Image 1 (cartoon, rainbow, N blue to C red):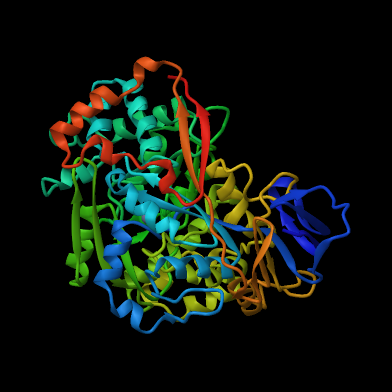
Image 2 (cartoon, helix red, strand yellow; image 1 turned 90 degrees about the horizontal axis):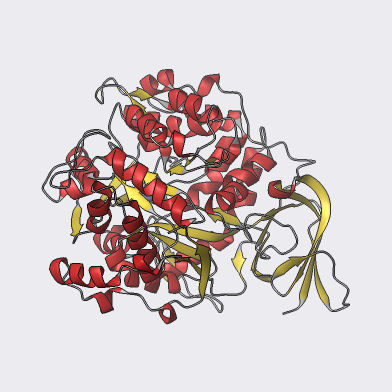
Length: 565
Ligand SMILES: [Zn+2]
């Protein structure tokens, strides 16, 4: 692999305090280095272009049984969107639920190099990793779902935090998982009985535990295990009017568990949890209340879950929520329960400008991103494909960077929603540096991925170069040029190799799969004998078959952490 020198670009590297300065970036053996001595190097002339670390997506449903079921449910999603084979790439299909190879190519074209699959049922981990293995161009990881797992609920209900931590540690290693995911904590277990929980203090049937206790318990477990990311939470009551209060309660319930001002909870796709009003008729934005809270705290990070007016496919482990969506839309629906662990639902969905609710949802995502003052606290996502497919990121970038772009669309949406929207009062426009935080640096920091999201010496040489000149282009007015530039990166560099040039894949590469291996200090807590018994009692799968062997990952990249238990 030849050394590479990127010359004269406008570099945005917020983690290292670089804000659009013209400088060179040197790369050797897949890493960023201080300088290059050898003569044999390739030079990229990035004059007049923006240079950023490769994009990082903290939450995007790209692999696993739920995604695959969505593909099967929606042939109509594939007909009109066929990706032809080229010399370098394989063919594929899919607009809102692209096939694995297409997913990798489309992210790479936008300059993204790391993507996290946020909902892995532990029982289905093998399938998730098989699909991730088949997703080229990007590094990746998956979050095992633990907020409704029986082996988590049982010890937590008895206050046995260390025993719960031992189980979580085992699950991380067994499933090659990266972070703890909680989806409607307690609600999915209740859904097994056709029920749900109504608030964070509503007991989970048959378990003598409340969502509050699950969230607080797993937050504590996360700290004991020193996992790189915080707990990653999809709140209770998601998608229901009035749920901003549940969202605030969720954030508040762990505010005293903070340490040194560092985040302890990530509330994901916050838009779906920022609804005010008592029903759909009185539906309103709760973004202001949430922003106010987040602005005065340091223990929370969030991501947008931004709606785009388009046809898409909703898919979540939140089975009871998907049932509501099915009733609202009368669309086709998949409901699935994963034994002793979680549930899932899938419903195709079309967000319409003319709809009062959809238009307000569109507004709420942007209101959050603009009213939460610190860009390190809110990241750009669409909860792909729930609020929109990830291919719409360039459009969202233009809304973040340009008030004109937002207002043009605001005029065309449902009138009542337009009046209720707070967007007309918000002047803020993201700078390139803030955008770099919201699309890579902030996400990498929240994930604890030390070699991602920045361009300092020792970082992975994952780099995006966009053909837009910040000295000549005013994103506020020329938002179309910005959108175009971010749609097709001039160059995407993965581990020091040029993989995309002018929006075309020029080389296909395999990405790494990150997973976390917690090292426990006390062997007493090794959970396997108890677990083997539990498997015999509850699962249709044998203990031995449950564990995903490391050689099952195409490119395994374990991160070892020293736990306190
Ligand atoms: Zn999600």
